[in-house]
Image (cartoon, rainbow, N blue to C red; front, side, top):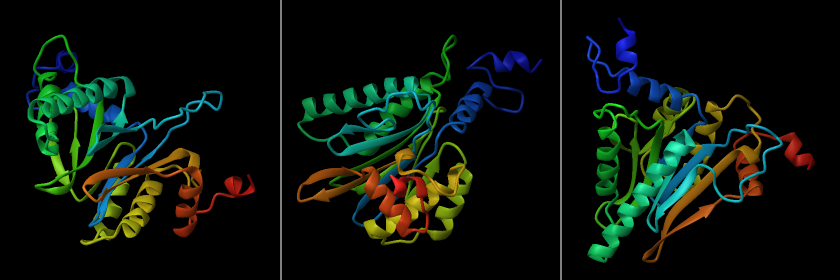
Length: 249
């Protein structure tokens, strides 16, 4: 009897659950973790890059952290192909808003548009939910820096710090204990790297498997900085994580 609920995206079980949405969330929890930290000076997005094979050519650009607009960035956890559709949707919505109003789109306004699109996939027969979750970080002149998460059900929430993906419970538990108000970017980076390592399967992570982007405001413009492997290694060493193989190289 339970199988008929498993096979349909728009039918509730007797106890009020949408099985396909739950399966989509479980698929996300099997992929590399990602987290965001809000500070007084800007935002930090960090994620784990999962290596499928050493034969695979390394990407020349970020594999999981994407710019949406000049003031909004996102980090993805889940199926990349599904994420690409939503990334393009978000970029188009942001560009259309700028064209129509000659101004940046508000971050929460953009999140609502994306979540409405995602939620529709849970009501239309013959379709499935997107198997991807996002953290969106951005800045607007009314609310300053903001961090939002979205999931396959179309729900979203605002956070000061949060993690999604594999072992996110361990990272979120650490963030709850150690996050404090009025952090500097340097303090936020320390918290972010410690929380991310807690989600990984090793205590000596390789810098090549970590992506970090820092978003800050310089004058009137929002700028992003992507950490290279040497900067990630330095951050790991500062926080007590060593990588002997990288040091030898």
